[in-house]
Length: 210
Image (cartoon, helix red, strand yellow):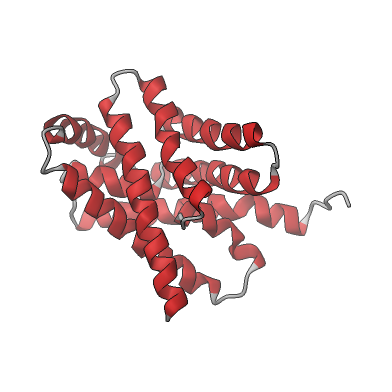
């Protein structure tokens, strides 16, 4: 039980970190600067060892089936953290700006087809695995920073779907509904499929150098 609580609390902290990135992105008029600064959220997660669903799901390939329970706990913790962060910001003087921009972003997402949402989430999942696994494998600090910030910028500027970031946007944009939750599940499945894509190929078809 202590391990589950630890997983959940670290996932909640992740929600706050992604909320930090989401808030600065919504506050920036320049989308390129905003996309770069959003990367601070993922940097906090990986540097402090928090639990991000899109960063952990790729390792389901190499873990036991019980790992799926861990992923469920992490997903719920991410949801709790982003929702709390978003609700708190709605009580601040910057809420009007954040809510207006978030609502516009959410409208685009929720008017998209589910097939499109899944595909966009799939590619985001690939990028998030690259960032998380790259951070673990690269020993050079500069390389670690690059492998964190570049995938984040690419997924944001490309319009890919990140389920945890969207948890924050849905909260700040005040658009939660059954439809919103359904879209979030599709985004999460797409992120999961993308996250396990490279590990599956690497495990099943590609022999790594010794």
